[in-house]
Amino acid sequence: MSSMNATPPRADRTLIAILSVIVVLVVVALAVVFSRGEPKPLDASTPAGVVQRYSAAVLAGDEDAAVEYLTPEARAQCETYQPTYVENVTVTLGSTTERAETADVNVSVVTTYEGGGPFGPAESEMAENFNLEKVDGRWLISTAPWSLAICMNAMK
Image (cartoon, rainbow, N blue to C red; front, top):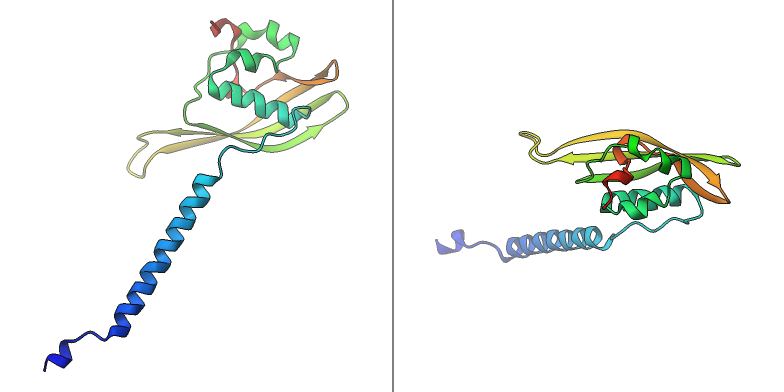
């Protein structure tokens, strides 16, 4: 009768094989997530590269670096900008329209709010636009979206 209660060895091997495959998949997924790192820097001489560097400076709280990407007119009007909320913000490049002296760079700005409700954090996503002008052969931002605007008066 004891032979009826014995589990066949084949079932144990199958279970071990399935668990091994799951462990390998989890390890590979974690490796992919953690190895992605920072996005590749775009060419700084392009409108998208300027927007990438400006956005990175704003998100890092480096107003001194961010203001270097603004046109002289935008710098002069900086008191009209409001300080921005940049925690838990992700900026993704959309499209770029480049003309001889002006350019538009469209981005998606996603803000994640902690404690958003019963289903986890809440997110808001907004399509935003940067306007750029060529000044002395260099692309500079003439207008930035309100969600990524800086104010020189807030700099210390």
